Each structure stands twice: as structure tokens, then as C-alpha cells.
Amino acid sequence: MSSLTSSPNANDAAGGRTDPQQTTPAEHRRGRKSWTEEEKRSFWQQKKQAKKERKKATAAGRQEALQSAWETLTEEERATRRAEAAEQHEGRRRAEAQLIQRCEAQLADARVPTLVFDLSFAWCMTVPDTKSTVSQVKFSYSSLRRAGFPFRPVITSLLGKEKADAEHDAAQQQEVLQALSNFDGFRRFPPRVTQEEHWSELFSADSVVFLSADAPDVLTTVEPNTAYIIGAFVDHNRYKGLSYAAAQRHCVRSARLPIKESVELGNRCKVLTINHIVDVLIKYEALRTAGTPNWGMAIDEALPIRRTRQEAQQRRKRSRHAVNGASSADEEASGSDTTHSRDE
Picture 1 (cartoon, rainbow, N blue to C red):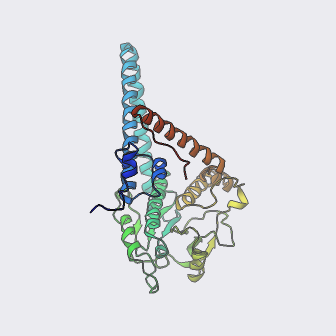
Picture 2: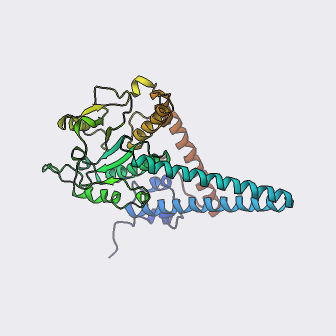
Picture 3: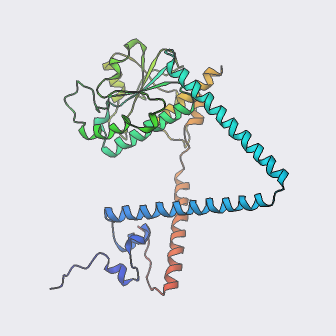
């Protein structure tokens, strides 16, 4: 007995398509309303592989061009190029040695301010948002290392909540957060990482400033011997005032970055990620150390510019035109009579 329900790939086969996983999202929307998870994974894997192959081809072409140019040089010119390359290599080696020396000195100096990534709010996040938080903490650590650790990093509460919190379940989030306990990128300069210990157990209340967008006071400067707490969580504004409430509960000072007071936001991102906050602090501390503290300059350099809606629409339109143009060319070559409907 034949089934009255046609295969989800029947329309594609009738239209001349052989594999729906090789089609574009726009083509899929024309023939069906949604993709399966397997199709999504397959499409993006193919897209990623194609990008990797393009980069590989570009690199090979660049190497071939350099080799061709090298063959046209005289022996004297080649010797000059070798000397310049050796000098550049030595310069990079010296710069790296100086950076390592600075990192070691900063991490050993108790006067250097501490930057604490407080993960005790993980219970309020979804698993994907927890993964995003882990990535942002890693980005933040990388920024601190490249800057020579103007702040000493500490990561607390991989438990995903405070020890005394019996109300919330953070088992799934805790599992994701363990990626920070054995991250290879921490191997050279390992930060202090705690599982259950909360930052309030590590620092005295009078030496703590909790950075919160809901704080009434503005952060005016960065002080030595001070721990600055960042509530490391991504909640898409579902939970208002969590970090400020935590500061009040633990009786510590709170402050917000002087963004509104220092820059005209315009089309810049108004919601700061964890690594945006760290970048602002790093740039301000560099200016302060140089004797020219300027929050406006630090924020202006750190905050990314968000594309306007019109720019985003134009970008999508160009992408659709490119896809449709390629699809039309393929169909003409194969003699397909497929009709195109408007993208959803």
C-alpha cells in the first residue's frame, strides 16, 4: 500500500534538485517551511568547509605570487630581504619576552587591581547562553593577557550559583562552566578559578566594587588593591537588577561604567558583553597609567559599531541576489523549469 503522504524531498526531486542539503536557505524556504536539525548542521558544515577551501586557495595563490616575485630578485636583494625578515623576527621575539615579563610582574603584584568573573548567576541562563558566557570569559582573559594583565583575573563559582542557594538548579550550567577549569589557554598564566568559593569569601567587602549597569553611582577611576566584580552571565535582559541586588546583599560598593556621561552612543551597541566591559577597563587603565585618563576615549575605542537596519537590509539583499543569480545560472545550465516564488 502506498502512502498518501509524499516524501519531504519529492518536490525537490521533481524540480530537478538531487540533494536538499546542497541547496541554499532561500531555496529551501521556497519548497518547505523549515529544515531539520540534521539538514541545518549539514548545510553549515558544508558552508564552513567551502570557506576553508577558499581561504586555502587564496593562501596558495598568495604563496605562489610571493615565490614568483622572489625568483625575480637578485642575490643582493634576497640578502636584504632575509636580513629584514630576521630583524622583524627578533623584534617580535623581544616584544614577546617583554610581554611575558610584564605579565609575571603584574600577576605577582598585590597592588594590581583584580577583575573577578562571577559565575554565580549561571542558574538564570540557558545552556546556549552559558556556552556564550564561557566564550566571553575566554575572550576577556585573552585581552587581559595581550595587555600584560593590567588586572589580575579571578574566576569564581563554577558551581553556577552561590553555595547557600538552595532555590535554583544549575546542574546543566555547571557542566558547561567546567570548560573554564581546564582550559588550555590558561596554562601559561593560570588565573585563580574556584568551584564553590564565592568572591565574597576571597575579598573583604571594603575592597570590592561590583560593576552593575543598575548601580546609581558612576565608576570614576580604577583603584589599586581593589577587586572589581563582573556579573558574568547572558540573560538578554530577562532578569533585571540581579547584579545590583547581589552587591547590596553582600554589602559592597557598586558602580556603573560612565557610558552615557562620556560618549554619544548613536548606533553603537548599547548592551555590553562581558568582553566589551573588560576591553573598556583595559583601555582606560592604559590611559590612566600613561597619565591621560579618559573614559570617553576608552569607551569609544572598545564599543563596536552596530550596523544600522538599512545597512543590514542592503547586505541581506545583496546576498539574496548573489544566491538567486547562482541558482538561476545552475537551472539554465541543467534545463530546469523551476519557478521562483518570493522569499519569505
